[in-house]
Length: 284
Ligand SMILES: C[S@@+](CC[C@H](N)C(=O)[O-])C[C@H]1O[C@@H](n2cnc3c(N)ncnc32)[C@H](O)[C@@H]1O
Image (tube, rainbow, N blue to C red; front, side, top):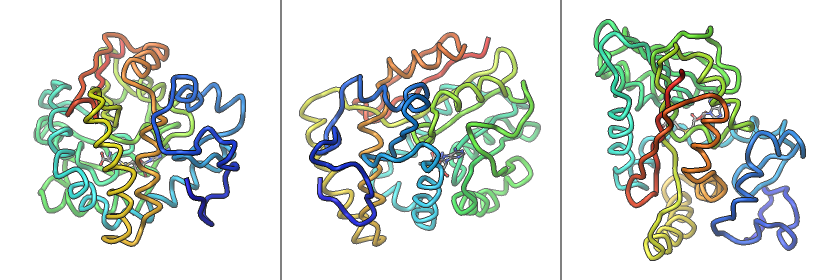
């Protein structure tokens, strides 16, 4: 992997991240809260950094991508990401009147889908650290005429600013892998859910079919950064995205993390050959 001035990282010659690829379980495990706490080191993509610096790096990344976030998401995924979000929200079985949390909610796609299911008496709350990301969501919610049903709160997913047992449903879409201590996010979702409440996590994952995976690797490590550079002048941001995905827990590992924080009835479903996976679980 070529180095760049923004990459004040380990020497790539000795780093396990020397080339773009999928990693084994031991390296994926290094992204979990316990090893991060033990080593004091976190990664954002293939960049390693002191754990306390990661939130700032994540904030800078999303400040940069926010103005074109939805456009780039739809272009780069050929619109499939919206289908995934619809399927994922469908998996939650939301009912009219439910209170739903959209953690790391950014531009509010999941909150919008949820609010349509929970109706006039329901509420959705987008909670995100980044105001620029939420600004895009505020405008969309206004255009959809749902401002009375969707609220925005700036807050950290590792310390959700709500009381225990506030929500009937808590969802996180493509956000959990950006946390410094991933399980803290799940633990917090568990805490703010009412007993019997449902958690949903939609995340990128590893395609199952090797040929498809090869094509996906070519697309994500070569085409995507190129499009990032050409379309929005941001190669680095769109190189980081596939890197974070390669380091992220596989569905069965994520299921284990959810069970460890106390969720039950953990289930997952792969989408588009496993490019994404949706997990659901219940807070007992
Ligand atoms: C890839 S975006 C996903 C946005 C939206 N959920 C979606 O599916 O399109 C990840 C979001 O997570 C937010 N985020 C990252 N770390 C966070 C944290 N510690 N607490 C709250 N939000 C965080 C970012 O600001 C960003 O808006």
